[in-house]
Amino acid sequence: MAQSTSMEEFEALLNESFEMDTPSEGSVVKGKVIAVEAGQAIIDVGYKMEGRVDLKEFANPGEAPEVNVGDSVEVFLRQVENSKGEAVISREMARREEAWDRLEKAYSDELRVEGAIFGRVKGGFTVDLGGAVAFLPGSQVDVRPVRDAGPLMGLKQPFQILKMDRRRGNIVVSRRAILEESRAEQRAEVIGNLAEGMSVEGVVKNITEYGAFVDLGGVDGLLHVTDMAWRRVNHPSEILTIGETINVQVIKINKETHRISLGMKQLQEDPWELVAGKYPLESMHTGIVTNITDYGAFVELEAGVEGLVHVSEMSWTKKNVHPGKIVSTSQEVEVMVLEIDGSKRRVSLGLKQTQRNPWEVFAESNPEGTQVEGEVKNITEFGLFIGLEGEIDGMVHLSDISWDERGEDAIQNFRKGDVVQAVVSEVDVEKERISLSIKGMGADKFAEATGGVKRGAIVTVEVTAIEDGGIEVEYEGAKAFIRRSDLSRDRAEQRPDRFSVGNKVDVRITNIDSKTRKLGLSIKAREIAEEKEAVEQYGSSDSGASLGDILGAALKGDE
Image (cartoon, rainbow, N blue to C red; front, top):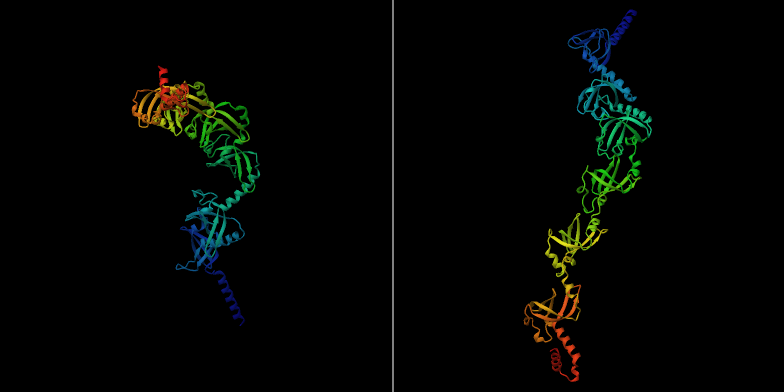
């Protein structure tokens, strides 16, 4: 009985040893490499069980497999025995299980893991993390977009696990997080060594329209275009090239954002410190037009010193014209210094001041009464504008066009482009105004005719035209009109047709109006005046003498 018991114990022990030696499927077991042949490793996994594994399963991406006879390796037992009587094992799957355990621990401890990029997939890359395959999104490869990831392939480097799900077999990693972390450390170290006002050396990394980014050894600083030179710089590429090493001054460091502002011109002498001495007021200088705007043109007097010629100071004669019609970029011009504001770093220049005021020149060479000739440039409701020498205009007012015709009528005789002669009547230099007179060219017939006579005088006129309403007459070259009612004291004789052109007639001057240039004449008034004179000389009708007697006596006296 005792012996049977011992047999049972032995059997139990034997079974236990079998169970210990026979691994269960789906687990990781230890084995020993007993041979390497035909690209495979033959591995003994115990209990006289052998399996084959392709050598490539022992290799990391981009590396040669390292496996030798006698090596102890862990493999994944997929099946205890296949049709060939061999165990179906996998080194890759064992590595994966081993890797997941390791990665999960690293993920929970927020530690970096080592891996190598080995493939390209949609939206990113695949990374071997020592047995487990992870996804590296394209945006997580570098801090800046990577055009060519070739140099990074197969390279062992650290990654940060962003997300992992063992059940689904998903791992997402980032290379960028590692770079940013090391950049931040490097940046903090570099910035810690910088101070405002310090002069440092840097390499131009990138150029934009507004400036350039300069690498100061792991940290970038912005060199704004306005801080590159004292002179105007239209584009940074005028003075900088990518990869160039330059000296810059640290202008400002923002401790919160770690933004660094740099300057180049601060290391050079400021030309403005010498401006007041070199460019006294009203001094003349030659400069180059650098920029043209609606309100004027900028002229560079020297590198770093620019002045503005306001549009109002560009030309004596061209008013309301765009500066681009007067000067052009890169043109050399002579200017006068009008004002200097050192605090605002502003110089006001004048272009027209380098030439004489054309109104002054005209006034000197054309005093009042001088005869001038010019083309009709413009016709307005109040007169004619005549082009004169020096690109200036003179104006003939309506009242100065003709002696004989009213201004509105006289202006109808002129067209643009007509060349006319006139005399200078006034020059106002301050108001830039020249008054001309066309009628001043001819004699004033009215003034000449009326100059020696007064109202009430009896003069002889010549009939020049017969009309229904009266007759037109001429006295010493001045025209006048005698209305029908003034042709005779006798109503029956108030007929224009009793006169002929060329008749000489005695008339009395009833009015001389110099403003309207009208001469009032009347035959009737002459007759009444003669009668009155006769009455005063020979008595009155009240004394008994008849009008016939008086007139008869007067006529007799004339004989």
